Image (cartoon, rainbow, N blue to C red; front, side, top):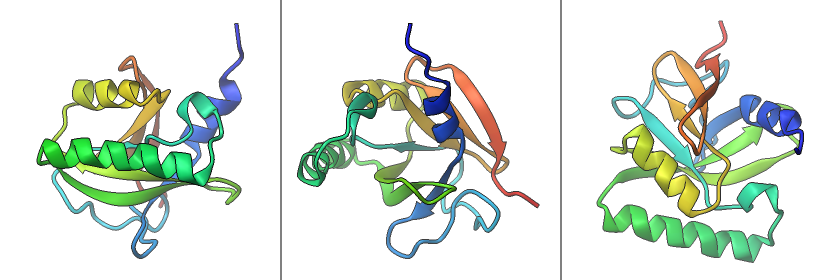
Length: 140
């Protein structure tokens, strides 16, 4: 069985920032959330940590965005960044999905996990809907 501890740690250490202006939605300098929580963060990039080209990832995220538009969901482009700055991935912060729906959508794009943000914490949730880790939304 593959040891995935380092992968889960990377999820736990992620900071979510708005793509358009780099404003933090989680972490020390987080702003108030733009929607009533929960907000789910999903990407279609790099399925199960398989590193794809920028073009392939863009095509996958475009397909995800088409689904979000077809379902008439509110969403914002965000970036999941490692706190150490060595990795980032374009994602979508989505309002209006249940946790189960968010996990189903992530599974459709072969994602290991999603983020769920509320007013208190950033939750890392496996695509099988198990809360793996909770970190404070803001670090005081």
